[in-house]
Image (cartoon, rainbow, N blue to C red; front, side):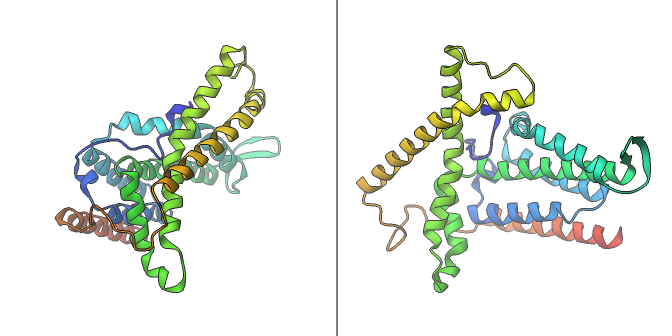
Amino acid sequence: MIRDITLGQYYPGESVIHRLDPRTKIVGTMLYLISLFVVDSFIGLGVAVLFLGFCIKLSGVPLKFMMKGLKPIFMIMLFTFVLNVFMTPGEAIVALGPLKITMEGIYNAFFMVARLALLIIGSSLMTLTTKPINLTDGIERLLSPLQKIGVPAHELAMMMSIALRFIPTLLDETDKIMKAQMARGADFESGNLFQRAKSLIPLLVPLFISAFRIAVDLAMAMEARCYRGGQNRTRLHRMAYGKGDAMGTVVLIAYITGLIALRIVL
């Protein structure tokens, strides 16, 4: 389960999506995530699914690998579905004492779960096709206009990039700690949901110690390389928009325009 999280990982490749400028992918991902909450019909949701499927096909990342990232949030999706089914007022279909299942509840539950799944897959697609260093540079360039009002764009970009980069690292550490404790007799798989959650508490102390150790090692490595933030910093590779970015922008504008038109018509 721990190794199924795909957010923050990088999938090597030379696809069209991999070659796009990181700024194009960051802005495109943000607009796609916003568009998921604009969709209010099955046709619009179908368009969002087709658009994401088209991007996944172009990226060359196996769909099975991306769907694996939904396993860790299955319980959250199930809880969201049940909560919307029983808590949304409307025309009752089935009554279970004080609880009622309504058509509106089923409709909202389906849309919320679908949005959550597409949100996770869409976010994962950006990190899977963008190297951490490129992601940092892209975020920094997008935030650079805010430097005029005192916002530390480089530091913010570096923190976000490190946070994403260390998600798989901490997951690997968690997996190692779990295996070490299981070898000593710990049981993480038996019992109900609450018992399983309680059995994970002993993981927190060694995980925090490991996280602080990794942070110290990273700080020492950056200090040894004379890292001084973004001031007077040069880059080995200059970012530049290409034909692929222009075509991607056109496709994204067409997608957003289509969704807005569907929202108005339907």
